Length: 115
Length: 270
Image (tube, rainbow over all chains, first blue to last red; front, top):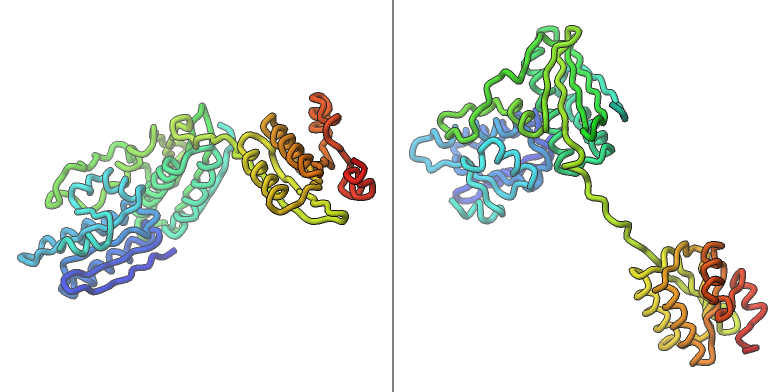
């Protein structure tokens, strides 16, 4: 089992397009991708989740850790924003109250343009 | 509990996705809808992840860890029983995290048990025979896949036969749903394509409703107006019975098969 993460650099935003099943066996890859992006000094991140068909709390944990890191960077305007989660993934985000914490956009274009 | 299914696996993270697959199949077979099935999958994933990460810490008796899952149906609920031989731990006594907590004050993790409790209709913990046993229950009635009326299907094909006959094969149900399509097709064949000698083969028609009968009659009239005919062949016994009851056998030429029609050529005798 693995997930794929396609990273694209925009002028002001780094786009991470995740696809596959994000669970306890694969969440580490998501965490690593977020950390590598943040380590490279990029703190404005869009996570496109449109191709994630399943996400457990292990995936949420990595997303929250990433968000905590970028928001802790002073004066960077850093944020992790979510694009196009499936109905099931959105339900899980809501269950953990993360729909109030992450900005969620219906499309990738809107999420990237929001910065 | 009936429809029981069993799965036993070593307490290792890579075994969780196949375990999820096992539960998805069982939940679907029990009649749960897509959303409820997803919830069951997530609850099992979170339970097993917790057992593996906390019950069998790395390097400690990990090789001894086994997780057993039993699924079944009972009292119109889908039941999942997850047992493991890690040290006794009741996850239900664990404090719930607060979903309204702001980012600064929340730990990134700790949502697994909360999800299990929220997603299932009931969760029950027992320590039985030196094993942790968590019983998850999802009501089937509330989350059942809606039963749709079967949709009727009917396909039409045709092939020219000698003596200007055209064989029209109908396959499926000839009822109010499919009749308009047949009516249109027969009109086109007779009116526009110029075939007036139709052999309607009903071998694979297992049901004809009153609207189906009407379609056959109007095609018969139209063909007759053009000095042709609609001849029926290969009726299933049940359908022949209906046709005879309503006197259709007095109106239509009915043959055993298209070959007999060509040999007899009743239209030229009309």
